[in-house]
Length: 115
Length: 113
Image (tube, rainbow over all chains, first blue to last red):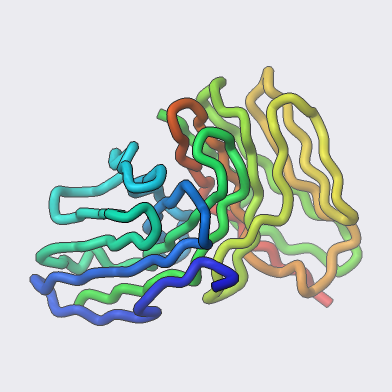
């Protein structure tokens, strides 16, 4: 596709339920990022992949959060035993270069609501 | 780690006036500073960026300035239009072995017609 695609767009989960959020980056993009954006706040970094390697996961808030990108393209962010504070928009972004700082293109995000 | 502070949090201007949003960063290793515009319910989109080897960059009505010594950078929008109304985020990128972009908290800009 032409841009970064995320699915689902909206997800309502009951507290304690596991969820999986998908990101399809722009084809050929080396870098992939996950961000969490709470209402009225800026995106907060969660984790970063260069191809299939997860190089930085310092932003993952707890061990309930897990991300993977097994073949270096599609990525999945999994949240286990969801809690109300996990409610946010989860943004995925990709960029062409691995080592250089270049423009990151964002997906439209997945709005997660935990009830 | 890097910390990016942005102000003001809200800015209201009259159509045709200029708007200025200011950011500071803490990590002197940061060398890439993008600005994103996010309309309600939509994805952040890059509007302009600047690298640490230049002090100013301009693109039509939008300009960004960078002061590396003071670790300040600013977004300037001239001749504002109602369609400029959105949330603007500054960001700083930490380089080396891959990178992550740290965002400011955002500025909600209202342009009154």
